[in-house]
Length: 287
Length: 236
Image (cartoon, rainbow over all chains, first blue to last red; front, side, top):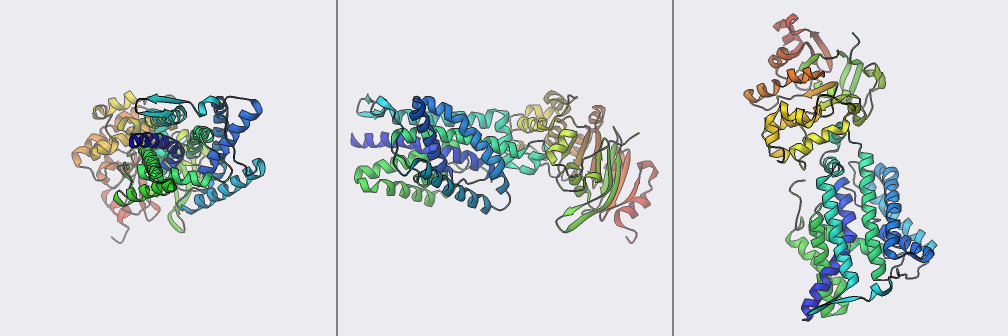
């Protein structure tokens, strides 16, 4: 039954990667902005939660609830006053600016929190597990996966069932015509990035409770997020979850064969999907 | 009567290329004005400058007496100027109804146009409300584009080449909506290559050639020869 266990653990790990990726996918889908600081923003949110937990003695979930509006505001301001200025026909400025932001964030966190590895203390939750017949699963990975599904259901609802989502899709389709209809793109983009930062906060909560983190690990999380988005097909949130699961399963399968192969197996799975389906598994029908 | 829209010496273009050379144009409240001219005469550029898509100086466009030239498009529409862009430019990832609802973003005041009113004007859109906008026929797509612009309850509706690429019977259907749009109180500016169509519906006509107005007047007052000369130039 070891293979079944591997599969289940991999799927659950995929939930974490989908959480890393959902915010990235949202922002890219709406404004074609690749945020190279996404991983560092996740780490920054994890530090914010850690501060709230250690200083105020809050439960980690409550701390994330407090951190989410703070991160929303930070994302809104970042987009409205910095990233919006970089958007245009040229795709290079947003890459350079977010790369710079990534370096600045890493060094600021290094200055503020030192290079020590930290973890968000989650008490008994860290080791709690459920016995499900042949396999036993950790409660924390299960919660992570469930949160990823909820995040994607909610984002899809916002995207396809609300006036805000309508404005997101219209702006993504055709910026000039959207403005002719009275949509203010600067505000739409700022709201989208704010929303992405709320997802980043949720990702940070599970990242920080699950494993150690330090100021330098952001870029590695970004790679997994990228791979999940690209495997899934740009712009598809369910595809992003599928992408996360494929990387998660590949990593646990690789680790089951030989622990040294864990990371490599995930990247190989990504390369194979890219070879067979260059546009991802669920690409959008147009553009 | 003070004009609803007035341009004075309007110049606009694309980068170093200038397409309009001092356009003086006025639209009175409730009036239908047609702008005719050959390809490349500057008709679309004129509408795009009025709608805020192309930059121009503040005083070059006045709306209800206020200088609005160079305001961003989203500010222009909320003042009451809506545009049906050339080529319709529907949002492909939105359904018919969602496209119409997007038009309400620029709504500044209550007015006659609601989702129900637009469906009343173009009943076929109600049947296709859940379809992707781009799955409709060309004529139906044009109806969506017009309905979408009406949803902001504009005081002035700019229509760019709404008959382009459509069959004559479909064009007739679309132009049949025009009297009801006027009953709603909106002034209409129509850019047309089809001169016959334009003369039929307009109170006044402006003819553009190479970025300048070459002729203006009420359709009945313009002879075929004068229009021909203004359209193609004296040499033609």
